[in-house]
Image (cartoon, rainbow, N blue to C red; front, side, top):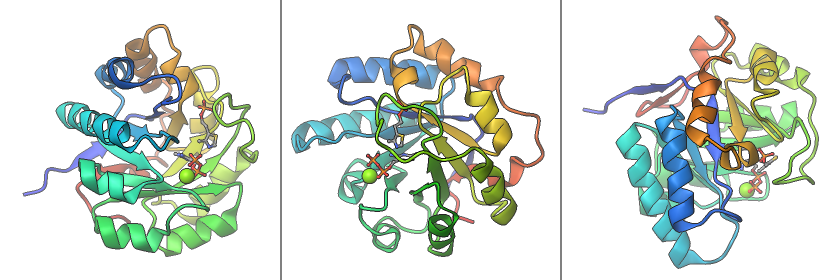
Length: 228
Ligand SMILES: Cc1ncc(COP(=O)(O)OP(=O)(O)O)c(N)n1
Ligand SMILES: Cc1ncsc1CCOP(=O)(O)O
Ligand SMILES: [Mg+2]
Protein backbone atom coordinates (compact mmCIF):
# COMPACT_ATOMS: atom_id res chain seq x y z
CA UNK A 1 0.00 0.00 0.00
CA UNK A 2 1.31 3.49 -0.85
CA UNK A 3 2.04 5.65 2.17
CA UNK A 4 0.67 9.18 1.72
CA UNK A 5 2.68 12.10 3.04
CA UNK A 6 1.35 15.65 2.90
CA UNK A 7 4.19 18.03 2.17
CA UNK A 8 3.18 20.87 4.46
CA UNK A 9 6.56 22.55 4.97
CA UNK A 10 6.79 25.68 2.77
CA UNK A 11 10.51 25.43 1.95
CA UNK A 12 11.37 23.90 -1.43
CA UNK A 13 15.17 23.80 -1.37
CA UNK A 14 17.09 23.81 -4.66
CA UNK A 15 20.67 22.56 -4.67
CA UNK A 16 23.42 25.04 -5.43
CA UNK A 17 25.35 22.45 -7.36
CA UNK A 18 27.71 24.98 -8.91
CA UNK A 19 29.25 25.52 -5.48
CA UNK A 20 28.34 22.43 -3.46
CA UNK A 21 29.32 18.95 -4.65
CA UNK A 22 29.39 15.47 -3.17
CA UNK A 23 30.20 15.55 0.59
CA UNK A 24 29.57 19.31 1.01
CA UNK A 25 26.30 19.01 -0.91
CA UNK A 26 25.12 16.08 1.21
CA UNK A 27 26.04 17.87 4.45
CA UNK A 28 23.91 20.94 3.68
CA UNK A 29 21.02 18.87 2.34
CA UNK A 30 21.03 16.71 5.45
CA UNK A 31 20.79 19.80 7.64
CA UNK A 32 17.95 21.27 5.56
CA UNK A 33 16.05 17.98 5.88
CA UNK A 34 16.76 17.87 9.61
CA UNK A 35 15.24 21.34 9.81
CA UNK A 36 11.99 20.05 8.29
CA UNK A 37 12.39 20.70 4.56
CA UNK A 38 10.23 18.14 2.68
CA UNK A 39 10.83 19.16 -0.92
CA UNK A 40 14.29 19.16 -2.51
CA UNK A 41 15.27 19.82 -6.12
CA UNK A 42 18.56 18.55 -7.50
CA UNK A 43 19.62 21.24 -9.99
CA UNK A 44 22.95 20.63 -11.62
CA UNK A 45 23.58 22.15 -15.03
CA UNK A 46 26.79 20.24 -15.81
CA UNK A 47 27.30 17.30 -18.15
CA UNK A 48 29.25 15.25 -15.61
CA UNK A 49 26.77 12.37 -15.86
CA UNK A 50 28.61 10.03 -13.51
CA UNK A 51 28.71 12.58 -10.70
CA UNK A 52 25.11 13.62 -11.37
CA UNK A 53 23.97 9.99 -11.03
CA UNK A 54 26.03 9.54 -7.88
CA UNK A 55 24.76 12.72 -6.25
CA UNK A 56 21.13 12.17 -7.23
CA UNK A 57 21.33 8.63 -5.81
CA UNK A 58 22.63 9.84 -2.44
CA UNK A 59 20.07 12.67 -2.31
CA UNK A 60 17.30 10.16 -3.05
CA UNK A 61 18.41 8.08 -0.07
CA UNK A 62 18.64 11.12 2.22
CA UNK A 63 15.17 12.28 1.17
CA UNK A 64 13.69 8.83 1.65
CA UNK A 65 15.20 8.63 5.13
CA UNK A 66 13.58 11.97 6.07
CA UNK A 67 10.24 11.39 4.31
CA UNK A 68 10.98 14.17 1.84
CA UNK A 69 10.42 14.27 -1.93
CA UNK A 70 13.29 14.58 -4.40
CA UNK A 71 12.61 16.42 -7.65
CA UNK A 72 15.19 16.36 -10.46
CA UNK A 73 15.60 19.48 -12.55
CA UNK A 74 15.40 19.05 -16.35
CA UNK A 75 16.26 15.34 -16.58
CA UNK A 76 13.49 12.72 -16.73
CA UNK A 77 15.99 9.90 -17.25
CA UNK A 78 17.94 10.81 -14.12
CA UNK A 79 14.69 11.01 -12.13
CA UNK A 80 13.84 7.46 -13.20
CA UNK A 81 17.36 6.23 -12.60
CA UNK A 82 17.57 7.47 -8.99
CA UNK A 83 13.94 6.82 -8.04
CA UNK A 84 13.12 10.49 -7.50
CA UNK A 85 9.52 11.50 -6.90
CA UNK A 86 9.43 13.81 -9.89
CA UNK A 87 10.95 16.37 -12.23
CA UNK A 88 10.88 20.09 -12.75
CA UNK A 89 10.60 21.20 -16.38
CA UNK A 90 11.04 24.63 -17.94
CA UNK A 91 9.67 25.88 -21.22
CA UNK A 92 12.78 24.72 -23.12
CA UNK A 93 12.99 21.31 -21.46
CA UNK A 94 11.25 18.01 -22.26
CA UNK A 95 7.46 18.10 -22.46
CA UNK A 96 5.06 17.53 -19.59
CA UNK A 97 3.36 14.79 -21.62
CA UNK A 98 6.61 12.86 -22.05
CA UNK A 99 7.49 13.24 -18.37
CA UNK A 100 4.03 11.99 -17.32
CA UNK A 101 4.28 9.06 -19.70
CA UNK A 102 7.74 8.06 -18.44
CA UNK A 103 7.27 8.76 -14.71
CA UNK A 104 3.64 7.80 -14.20
CA UNK A 105 0.55 9.30 -12.63
CA UNK A 106 2.00 9.58 -9.09
CA UNK A 107 5.04 11.59 -10.16
CA UNK A 108 5.36 15.21 -9.09
CA UNK A 109 5.88 17.21 -12.27
CA UNK A 110 6.43 20.94 -11.86
CA UNK A 111 6.34 23.42 -14.72
CA UNK A 112 7.99 26.84 -15.01
CA UNK A 113 5.38 29.46 -15.92
CA UNK A 114 7.56 32.58 -15.49
CA UNK A 115 5.05 35.48 -15.24
CA UNK A 116 2.47 33.98 -17.57
CA UNK A 117 -1.08 32.85 -16.81
CA UNK A 118 -1.25 31.47 -20.37
CA UNK A 119 1.70 29.15 -19.65
CA UNK A 120 0.04 28.19 -16.36
CA UNK A 121 -3.22 27.37 -18.17
CA UNK A 122 -1.37 25.08 -20.54
CA UNK A 123 0.51 23.38 -17.67
CA UNK A 124 -2.71 22.95 -15.68
CA UNK A 125 -4.53 21.48 -18.69
CA UNK A 126 -1.61 19.11 -19.28
CA UNK A 127 -1.75 17.71 -15.75
CA UNK A 128 1.11 19.53 -14.01
CA UNK A 129 1.50 18.81 -10.28
CA UNK A 130 2.50 22.37 -9.47
CA UNK A 131 2.94 25.70 -11.21
CA UNK A 132 6.18 27.63 -10.66
CA UNK A 133 6.19 31.41 -11.03
CA UNK A 134 9.05 33.89 -10.81
CA UNK A 135 11.59 35.20 -10.39
CA UNK A 136 10.02 37.54 -7.85
CA UNK A 137 13.20 39.20 -6.53
CA UNK A 138 16.82 39.63 -7.63
CA UNK A 139 18.35 36.20 -7.93
CA UNK A 140 22.04 35.49 -7.47
CA UNK A 141 21.61 32.00 -8.91
CA UNK A 142 19.77 33.00 -12.10
CA UNK A 143 19.87 36.79 -12.45
CA UNK A 144 18.65 36.72 -16.07
CA UNK A 145 15.39 34.88 -15.27
CA UNK A 146 12.34 36.97 -16.29
CA UNK A 147 10.76 39.02 -13.51
CA UNK A 148 7.22 38.37 -12.23
CA UNK A 149 4.83 40.42 -10.05
CA UNK A 150 3.63 38.97 -6.73
CA UNK A 151 -0.04 39.58 -7.72
CA UNK A 152 0.30 36.71 -10.18
CA UNK A 153 0.15 34.25 -7.27
CA UNK A 154 -3.32 35.35 -6.18
CA UNK A 155 -4.52 35.28 -9.79
CA UNK A 156 -3.29 31.70 -10.17
CA UNK A 157 -4.82 30.71 -6.80
CA UNK A 158 -8.22 32.11 -7.84
CA UNK A 159 -8.12 30.22 -11.13
CA UNK A 160 -6.66 26.90 -9.90
CA UNK A 161 -7.28 26.71 -6.13
CA UNK A 162 -6.20 23.07 -5.95
CA UNK A 163 -3.01 23.35 -7.97
CA UNK A 164 0.03 24.13 -5.79
CA UNK A 165 1.90 27.34 -6.58
CA UNK A 166 5.66 27.54 -6.16
CA UNK A 167 7.40 30.93 -6.05
CA UNK A 168 11.07 31.26 -7.01
CA UNK A 169 13.81 33.83 -7.37
CA UNK A 170 15.71 35.73 -4.68
CA UNK A 171 13.62 34.32 -1.85
CA UNK A 172 14.98 34.10 1.69
CA UNK A 173 13.90 34.51 5.29
CA UNK A 174 13.44 38.27 4.81
CA UNK A 175 10.78 38.01 2.09
CA UNK A 176 9.34 34.46 2.20
CA UNK A 177 6.40 35.41 4.44
CA UNK A 178 5.39 38.08 1.93
CA UNK A 179 5.47 35.55 -0.90
CA UNK A 180 3.45 32.96 1.03
CA UNK A 181 0.91 35.60 1.99
CA UNK A 182 0.63 36.64 -1.66
CA UNK A 183 -0.54 33.12 -2.56
CA UNK A 184 2.42 30.77 -2.86
CA UNK A 185 2.24 27.34 -1.23
CA UNK A 186 5.97 26.74 -1.47
CA UNK A 187 8.98 29.02 -1.68
CA UNK A 188 11.82 27.66 -3.83
CA UNK A 189 15.15 28.78 -2.42
CA UNK A 190 18.65 28.08 -3.66
CA UNK A 191 21.26 30.67 -2.64
CA UNK A 192 19.97 31.57 0.81
CA UNK A 193 19.43 27.93 1.80
CA UNK A 194 22.89 26.79 0.77
CA UNK A 195 24.76 29.85 2.02
CA UNK A 196 23.04 30.01 5.39
CA UNK A 197 25.39 29.67 8.38
CA UNK A 198 22.91 27.18 9.88
CA UNK A 199 20.82 25.40 7.19
CA UNK A 200 18.90 23.36 9.80
CA UNK A 201 17.76 26.50 11.59
CA UNK A 202 17.12 28.18 8.22
CA UNK A 203 14.70 25.43 7.22
CA UNK A 204 13.15 25.31 10.65
CA UNK A 205 12.37 29.02 10.60
CA UNK A 206 10.22 28.60 7.48
CA UNK A 207 7.67 26.68 9.54
CA UNK A 208 6.70 29.80 11.46
CA UNK A 209 6.33 31.87 8.27
CA UNK A 210 3.20 30.11 7.09
CA UNK A 211 0.17 32.38 6.99
CA UNK A 212 -2.76 30.90 8.91
CA UNK A 213 -4.66 30.70 5.67
CA UNK A 214 -7.51 28.40 4.69
CA UNK A 215 -6.36 28.83 1.08
CA UNK A 216 -3.40 26.51 1.49
CA UNK A 217 -5.11 23.31 2.52
CA UNK A 218 -6.40 22.23 -0.91
CA UNK A 219 -3.12 22.89 -2.66
CA UNK A 220 -0.65 20.83 -0.66
CA UNK A 221 1.38 18.28 -2.57
CA UNK A 222 0.77 14.74 -1.34
CA UNK A 223 3.45 12.15 -1.93
CA UNK A 224 2.19 8.93 -3.43
CA UNK A 225 -1.11 10.40 -4.60
CA UNK A 226 -2.28 11.22 -8.14
CA UNK A 227 -2.19 14.86 -9.17
CA UNK A 228 -5.21 17.14 -8.93
C1 LIG B 1 10.68 25.32 -8.60
C2 LIG B 1 11.37 25.79 -9.84
N1 LIG B 1 10.83 26.79 -10.53
C3 LIG B 1 11.44 27.23 -11.65
C4 LIG B 1 12.60 26.65 -12.08
C5 LIG B 1 13.27 27.08 -13.36
O1 LIG B 1 13.22 26.05 -14.34
P1 LIG B 1 13.72 26.38 -15.83
O2 LIG B 1 12.92 27.51 -16.35
O3 LIG B 1 13.74 25.14 -16.63
O4 LIG B 1 15.21 26.87 -15.60
P2 LIG B 1 16.43 25.99 -15.02
O5 LIG B 1 16.23 25.81 -13.56
O6 LIG B 1 16.46 24.67 -15.72
O7 LIG B 1 17.63 26.83 -15.31
C6 LIG B 1 13.13 25.60 -11.32
N2 LIG B 1 14.27 24.98 -11.67
N3 LIG B 1 12.50 25.18 -10.21
C1 LIG C 1 16.21 28.46 -11.27
C2 LIG C 1 15.60 29.79 -11.15
N1 LIG C 1 14.59 30.17 -11.97
C3 LIG C 1 14.15 31.39 -11.73
S1 LIG C 1 15.02 32.14 -10.47
C4 LIG C 1 15.97 30.74 -10.25
C5 LIG C 1 17.06 30.63 -9.23
C6 LIG C 1 16.56 30.54 -7.82
O1 LIG C 1 17.65 30.62 -6.95
P1 LIG C 1 17.77 31.75 -5.82
O2 LIG C 1 16.91 31.29 -4.69
O3 LIG C 1 19.23 31.71 -5.44
O4 LIG C 1 17.35 33.06 -6.41
MG1 LIG D 1 15.06 23.67 -16.89
